[in-house]
Image (cartoon, rainbow, N blue to C red):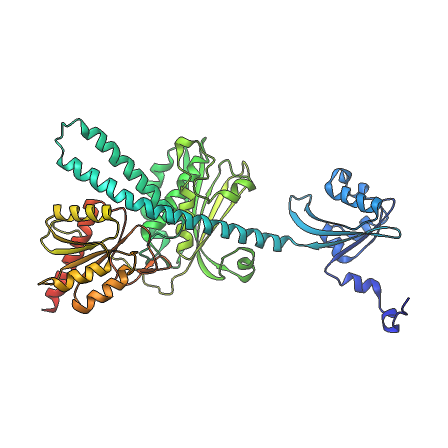
Length: 511
């Protein structure tokens, strides 16, 4: 045996062990505590003198029935080390996770403990974020394909109904097709929102004003047996969000709260200026420290257990009856908040209500913005429009819609064909409508080539799945006109007319 260095012999071993972050307990063969360092006492939230000299069963009645005790017993009998994870519940209901390593010693066993609660929480949040991102990519891809199909279904059924005699027996069937298509379009829109692939047009606004505008509608939505209480923060900071999307967040949270209070109750909506510190950001994945505006929606309803809370933002997950929803309401809220640069957290207990807290970073400017939409005098026109779309059925129905509204339409199945057509035309086209994602040449590249020939060309991008060709992180680039599929006749005609009328106003202003 090697001799012990004199410097080591002089160390105060008790002080050294108490300075360790790892808990150390020594338990003898009679299951009595014979030693415990400061960390172990802190882990158990009981002072060492209260435990030393007493048996485990005296200190913790019922411990013999737990998996931890069985692991201790196995080490005591078999004299082999054992490792396990222990979820320890305190009398006040709090819980912590400890990694335990149990080793045999001459007088019994030594238990080493490390608090891994925070690490496990961060790991679980990261896994959850990765799962949500994977589901989002899948949802976005499904929405892209469906939006192309729905462009054909909706536009064709609407135009067929316009041509049909009001008394024709086929009208009922076509109306059913149209209604089903509209419901499917709403579902795909919600999938895009959840997957954070919805194109946002953000504005700088005050959430207090948004809630005031919605308050009357919320009271009607909740009914007479639910009291609505609103607390507005004075001098609330501004946020940068899409107004239509934040309306949807508030309404969806209110509907969810209403359904959680079948026998009535109270819904509280609250705004506040808050500062998220580094500790909060470290404890919540994706959260960024700094000044935020908080929107809280609380109910006094049935509440949720931990398992339900872990799935609550997943698409199609619902605890409600099938007839009461699709399970996309909260996933839509999640997608909007995340795509807006914010975070959302849920706090709930069974039979004690639920609170959703949305945190949005404050805007860098202090001036609210509002861009009113101008309604065109007519949806018809006579201009020449080039439609570029690689999906034959979508291109055909788009062309048919535009011709119905009086436009002269030229078709191209891809960017290369569009360039050849434009070179052969005797006069320049007035407008280009192009899909964003196409083989060989995307819509953005095509526009860049055509702008060399016609700098004043008006452009409308359309897509069932926005890509970085026209948006960055879901935010529409300045000066870009974009229309989300599915294509619906009146919506397409209105957007086309707004763009062309706007170009005409600019031209008159320059002359």
